[in-house]
Image (cartoon, rainbow, N blue to C red; front, side, top):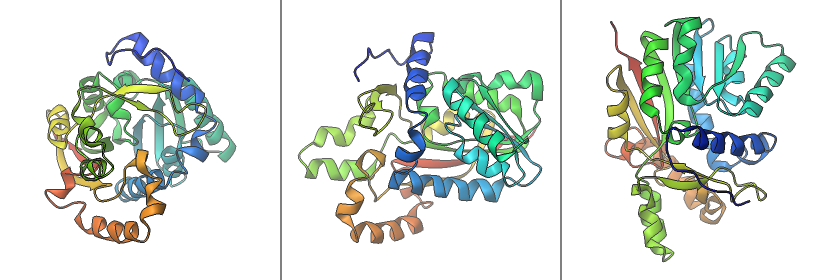
Length: 286
């Protein structure tokens, strides 16, 4: 499915393009993207950190909830969640899932990532924390507004947990030259890179301009109101999402690499070399 590609700019055309893409894959996301080996591994790690950080009775906001996998998992543990997403169809699905499970502590709102600050009128800075998973922050040109909005919502010393697509991927830098595609090994250094939103055969040609961030640059953007507590690299020695088919080809080597990566992921400089990095930020106290 080919469609005109808008510029990576914070204008209505760009956000309509992104929303339209995710509206189309709402019903396939859970059994295509969420079933991807890399996606499952990243989600498992993200949920481990979420469950360690947020407790029964906490109130949190999610930026880019998708089909609500993390929001539902937290709500089932007693955390009150306000889940937001740009896609109206995704938000509708999250509401349906929550209703089917009888979760009264989960509500979903249609908001782009940069619009999350609009919740301040209703909630003030009453959130104990926030989180975002799946590279959502890479797809909003107004990421500085995301940082400002969360600063208004999250109470002092509250936490913001997020996974962000890195500007550097050690695996890609080593892998692509070996398969005689050296330029692809450094494509993340481009300013705005079009990426497919799904591996689903019907929609995999639908791409969205995306901006990759180094951990240093990302922490600069959020550094005015948040401080870094922890940084962890993910998919350092293992293929990233777009190369997950290589997991089976590399097994059992991939399993050995996974064991090594688990031990190296939060150590410098390896924590800055993953295809994805997981950042744990704390709202600076007033």
